[in-house]
Length: 435
Ligand code: SAH
Ligand code: SF4
Ligand code: F3S
Image (cartoon, rainbow, N blue to C red; front, side, top):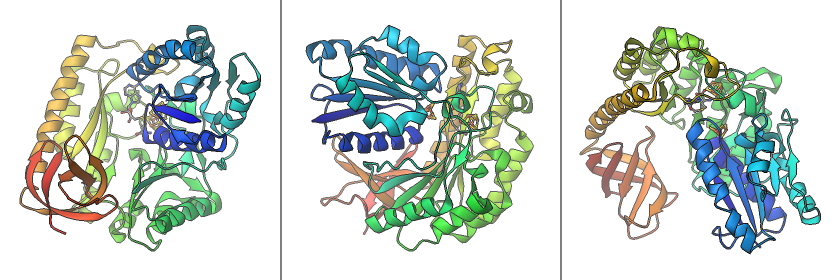
């Protein structure tokens, strides 16, 4: 029997889809297949912005025909969108052919829900308010060798005024340090070469015995073996000098910090409930660069937040230069029902938002291009992670988070490959392998 999983959203969700695959395997679905050949299809959804939801609606809607031609097909919809208040009932009425709706906290039960569905005719809806345990006992089917993700915590307590995540992922719960470190160790033993520690706000990790994130990170970095360590996402309000020292002391930790700034304007940051200022943000980066001079910083930025003026927006533009970001994810503010910002006065017109996002992307790209150009002629070490069949090239990232491409006769996935960069194009580097 075959399964097909469609994933939207962040790395957290991609990793959860690996867990969903693990559950499906234990239910007797052995092979991952295309949509048309599947016996069960699972949509692991995201609701961070309106377009993420619309994308899922379109794809779920298009399954109506498939279900008609194959009535024994099981269609399950889970993830953040299913967890939104009132959304599961709405999805059921809009897409009555959905068999199972499960929330973010119900993922470990998916196997039982499928069993129940095989016996019962009606749509099964299973939602919980909060996550009960930090260990779900699910063995993921990892699909991104040589990279592996490890959850260190779940949920978020921050309630940034624009964000739906705290409503759909519940309160922060940290996993036990020993469980995390055991998982990292066994991944390294299995041959994984890059481990990413995952949480919505890793800097507020609080493990059993009072363990904080810097200590956990250092313990993970001290595990023996040839691997790299990444973590995401850090929140600037919980950034610490101790974290900088841990990065400095441990060469296994990648020289790239993803530190979402969201805006360069203090007035907007305060309305966003981010609890830091432009000045403290910049001083954190300055400290990082003083101690780890080659560390790159990447970020997330939002334009068009309610009441954002041209002047506020220009402060975001100038932050791109002041912080010297090597790249940034840029978003147009999307109102999310139930959040504080959605009911604020002063929502920004779409035209203005479009104009601002274009100008921001231009500014970010100019900086990225300039940084990429400096790579030409230099050697960089990539962890080769994939092969692009269309372009006939292998690809991988360096410790600064840059993507590099090279040709090779033999399979290099999982190898640390040094390339001499011959060309830089936007964020990507092209070169020849020298080892
Ligand atoms: N926990 C992480 C980010 C999670 S969401 C953090 O705090 O940094 C990833 C990014 O989506 C956020 O950093 C933010 O830039 C963006 N985002 C979240 N809600 C949004 C919304 N309503 N509209 C537009 N972008 C949003
Ligand atoms: Fe959302 Fe803020 Fe939590 Fe990140 S820290 S998930 S942006 S509420
Ligand atoms: Fe991630 Fe989207 Fe949920 S960004 S946490 S999948 S709302």
